[in-house]
Length: 385
Image (tube, rainbow, N blue to C red):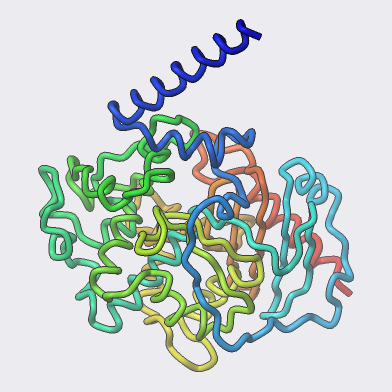
């Protein structure tokens, strides 16, 4: 018994010492990471982690349910698609044809109302919010300087970076996009309780507007500009200008850095469902128009889904692009394989949400599961009577 007491005493001393050292070396955010992620057996953020963070509601208005196709779910997933769902732990898969849900599958206890983390699909939403703020005159243009909103921004090229540079991933920000390192800036941003301080502590140390470099911190800084320009939390702004007009069927949640007056983790972390995420695909497929109302300027929409840099044809402003099997497509993309894929030529939207992403190589900016979702969906549609 005496040995156990002594052991417990030393364990407590070591634990307290570690915590003190974390605060001294400014890595106390790791305490939150351990509590919310690592202690639960995960090595990175996960689909339902929103339940362990403070959130702000993205409130719905009057729901506009999707039409259901006459032959809804009449064709089963192909063997290849079914295998991919199992291997990558898909939780939701939708095929929306001609604005009607043609195929819909849920797995692992999830259903059409289940919330999951959007991860970086939120970047497309933030860019849409930028477009709306420009239409309303709250932001002058894509060329407006970030220092108009944050004159304290640091770095050699701080005065050069524009909101358009942030949206198109050409910011020059000193940010390291490493998801699995506990000491990376990505991890700090995800778990720190003062995200604004983290972002404004970074520098614009490369000349912006020159080339594509995917940096989540750029989107976070963009959201901070939108918040300052509009005078609204981005959750409220997205609710009023998109979620409600587009008839989302459920309220959504947006993770915050801390309770009450915290800011949204805007580069990620909208908790919603496949049907409601798909609405942004439909909005862009319709060139910014919804029920006869021009929610976004069509020119802005076109710019979003057109590559900014010739050497990086995979990205425009907040959206990814590709050509698969001769079909031009653009898509929203998030960590662990979240997708809203839009193929305007065939009036087609494909949504996939799940726990794991396919293989990503250094030679292809698109993961291999993207090809599977598109190609196998077309095979299924080809079987339609």
